[in-house]
Length: 187
Image 1 (tube, rainbow, N blue to C red):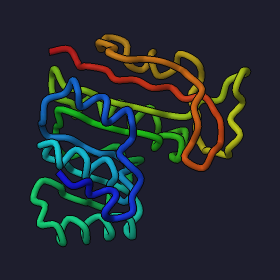
Image 2: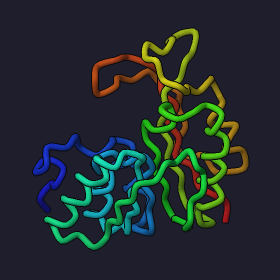
Image 3: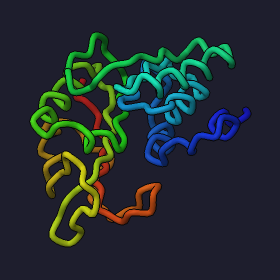
Image 4: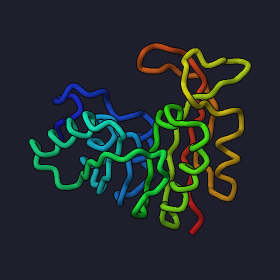
């Protein structure tokens, strides 16, 4: 299978999305804050039926162009501001990687709640988000960062298949701490 990400000059799919696909069977998936579609293309090539949303119409246009050129019928690219927290469908897998830190802090609770409500029973949420901690003060001026334990607390009652708050490096080289979580909704 040719890697469409490299063909179109995109970064590879996020490593956590790749890892999650080892546990999650193909299903209806939502890529929240998809940018130009690196995760959506990866998921589509693995049999997922993907809705890819981003507030940036140019990014969605680029993804739609790739989808059209490749004749992909398993990706729906849509301009959607996740801050509205008004998803219209339910999904077996929702991926939200390095996205929450770019939204208005007052909307994060509503966005996470909306994700949870629109996850099918037994479905999965994957979140990777920057943190701001004493050990690793966030060097970037993100509108939102998580505090220690905050993401785990938001998913009380879900099965945490993976949860850590480890240092990492952004694609631009900035070193900071990330909360990474793969959680399964109770059936």
